[in-house]
Image (cartoon, rainbow, N blue to C red; front, side):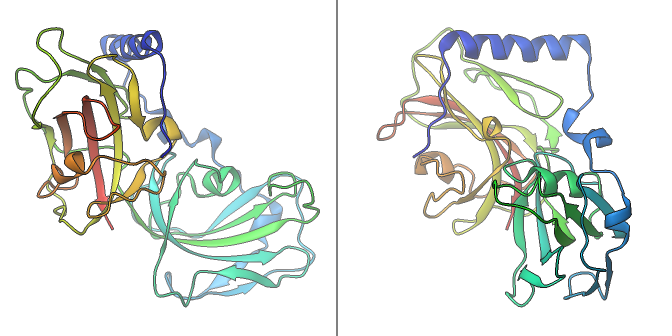
Length: 305
């Protein structure tokens, strides 16, 4: 289990900062800023890929193809929403060696798309896809410097079809908060600041409310879901779990509790999401379960895979 914990002071400061953001009326989401996307360049413009989006493309590149700075070209522009950092997208891809043009790896033929969290350990590719609309085919030429590993001497080429994007944050209809639940304040990115009620002790039974009521797909007992969540311990006010701090949403099996971020989420919390719809933001007052202390959870349901 990977547990992300910050001190009490840090948690309070983080919550205060979110309140300040709300009070100043700032609504700019930095994750949606296109200024950090890779530029189009001479190298990426040389990559040609033909064929239907979602089907294995015919890729043509002059070799050797090299660049000192990573570039991207949107070969075919889709008609969907532009994707942003901190968002999970479903892609099909082909990776080629820039020196030879040979295919090194491809997702085509697997029968499934690949879920990619933009901005989580794949900086050049994330910036290459950033602000490209869903339904686009994008050529990203990655410089040796950005390729990772000290031994990279040639550029890499990645041709990506963006097939689908899950929500970047809960977008359901806002509902009034109930008594006895924590106060939740949201940053422009959607990340919550959580203040535990000063009255009353830690919860002995599970209580749930919806702060946002979505109208997307329904979570089932055997669903794989895309979630953003923060849990704050009821007694010590520390952050116990947070996908937000990892930089990307988590893919979680409701049935097994298995998490892509390797966080052992309590089954009692996951059970409360069954029957809820994508787009919902759920607040869960959860008692202690195993080694997980009693906590207040704020969970955004971003998609069902």
